[in-house]
Image 1: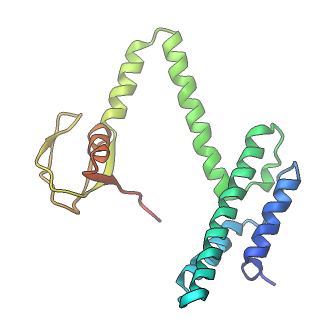
Image 2: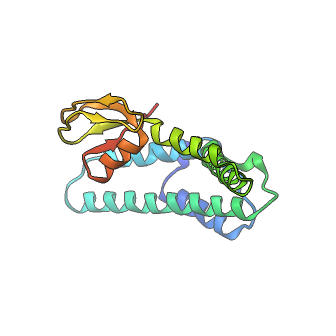
Image 3: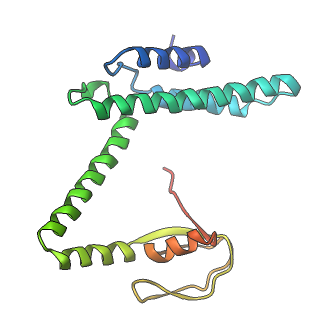
Length: 185
């Protein structure tokens, strides 16, 4: 029986239970999260009436909770151990850990520059971050703006998508005028 056929609420629950009971990181099929995604996606596509629909919605909620719990348990084990078998890490977990490594490197860079008196480096870093471009979708009409990089942007209509400096994007997002666009492959 293929992994995708095995994934159901009971299989997911048992996987979470095993992961909880074992101190080491369990070896899980490399396609686990993708198969789980298909299982939840297929559940969401099903249409029922009345009680059957409530049961389906409860199963979806349960699958989501169990998935979140599993990811958190596995990442917690990884962060607390210094001898994790990297072969047991799933690609999606490696993706998460990669961002944590980058965050740690950035923290060390800021600390080093601060304690070593490299204020010009910190100034440059801050300016580069402010002017770093991100993609946003406008939720409202916006007149022309002057970006953190002193360039002109806009005007924008509702639903326009644009690449603007990070600092400007954050201000618009905070005011619910725009939302960050996350590109999905």
